Image (cartoon, one colour):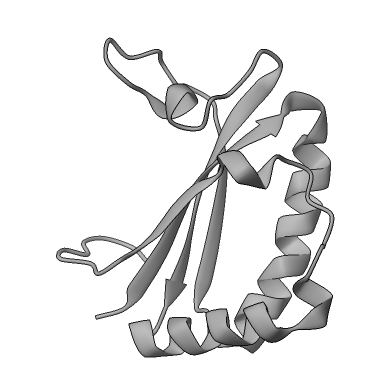
Length: 118
């Protein structure tokens, strides 16, 4: 089965297009390093929870929306090799992002069920 990187990111509402454009450019880098698919989702129906929620998870502030995204890799090994390459790539160091990366949450996930289209 594949391997998935998941992300939740607070993005200023006014940076929607800048985020989409940056993600599209980053897709080329990911694809060239083995990624199979990237999905970027702009918050459309993100309710406040009673205990926690997407907005609180990333300390979203007034005027920010939440992006939920994931990258599908053929395996954890391919993903790990791509991450190592990114960390060593000078082009990736200090790249300007249209969001506060300190509040992004992310992780790698091993699928246990994959149904439907993909």
